[in-house]
Length: 367
Ligand code: SF4
Picture (cartoon, rainbow, N blue to C red):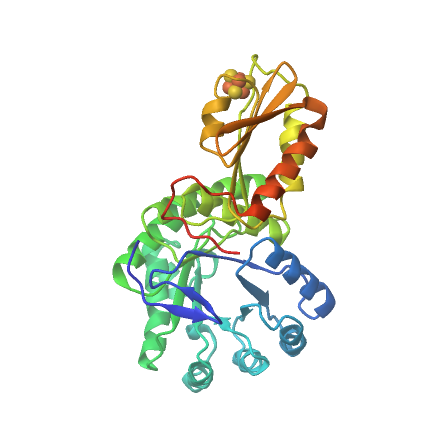
């Protein structure tokens, strides 16, 4: 993993060797405190570790105080463009991080006021460079928002903070395509030791955007680049959080909740309604936070092997499911009763703490 300095967003450490944190952003009107708090709670249930809210106007900045009061334990980030006063109001409301580009909030005096206030509250600042809103002079010089232009923009903002002796900085460099995003982060990773917030911006629908994010973030994370991630989807924020976790779980960087190995099925399938069974088991176990490895296999070809590597497995044969616990065959259950029986066994395993027996010492578990 790339060596970075550690920055704290409330009690969540970003960088400095900490586990990669999953974050997301609310999509409600921030002045709708009720709706925003409800969405934040949903996000937290899905495993969101840092929540960002947009602060587009004065009313939203005012609403932050009440939101803060209602979710006191949530690491909260205020997303601010241009208006330094909203940044000061957000700090006054007690947010834990600002997302703002110091070069965009006007006169040097204003920047200094915000940075001083953030420093005195030990609130970090994320510089968020976006390929779609690069400075005009950089666009003129580079022709378009190239990775080099994005990095130069980031370095400018970083310099402003460093000149004010501020180093609690996190940086993101988001473009809406994977190749540019990856190239930009790689370039910046060579230049600075600040933690990086990864994301492919405006990635798209839940389906296409998840793939785009998984590839972009996956390539970087696999190289050891990235300290916190946000998956941007045209979907509910808790969906973004779920996808973020799946990306980290796939790379074995973090552990959380149920991981299901399910076969794709083929002509050997020995049970009806296999897809419904898998979907229903996943749905019924979505509340589990502990890392639990499950395998659901359609026939005996690969079933026992996968069951051996799982905490709990089921392999079908002639419409009947054989349940395995920690790789050992336990009991047979009729296909119609398998969802109920399997869910009960999984919940029992968690209650007994008899899970995660597989050998993966590098994994980090959160509860
Ligand atoms: S486990 Fe059996 S049913 Fe499933 S894909 Fe493999 S061979 Fe086909």
